[in-house]
Image (cartoon, rainbow, N blue to C red; front, top):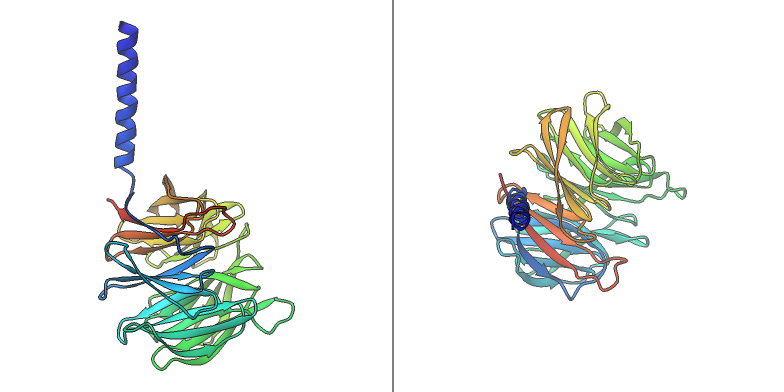
Length: 339
């Protein structure tokens, strides 16, 4: 009898600890929107806070998907794209720009936020991919391939969003980059370059590379900037690691393992957390500029690699892709960020 009572007590303690651990997870799943009409890769998100809309680029579906930002409910698909990758919503004009391209095509499309009709198009070099918006000069910087036959360089195409014009470009080393960030002054751009496996810094006034920091890994993807502490965060796939760079010196000050097959990385300034999405969601806490703790690995789904943290809503939106996954169930997952 005593042995049985002891077993019950042990089981009760384990269940209580498990329940407490689940309650203390920093990300709580609050909504799941299945996407049975889509296949393949899902790419970048954008939000329209005033219009309560969430946009998602479905690369292989050749659409931009529209959702209710609050509930996650699917609203409609916008067609007539080739391979949409990234998107920036322009609240002042109720329009958005989509980067659209693959190995044989490149461009950006201007889309009405009112009726979702494509209003204009700018042809760019092939392999258009990620973009980053500069709120200071209202330029949208879009990565693409170049005319370099050896693939040793690629371009950052500069789109003036006020009049939707191509106003220049910047040549960067390497075949492509998978993420960019711009400082709050709008003067420096940081790019996670694939090929040379490096992070480069670009002076946006001279449009020249002014620094390059080697990354001791491959498949560098997500990137975010912590300006207050002069730190830059990146994630790599091979091996899956989280790196912290000192932006004054270019030196790596911290390295930790992270989610496999990761793609996007976000910095939660209020809570001093970093979220990295991949086959799970890695959550790190910043103790100070040089010290970081891995809090937890939050279960998500295989290939749940692209994501967007929206600080105004304290939510993390995650897209579950299906490329190379038999019978994949694509979806958008919404997580509430908890204290």
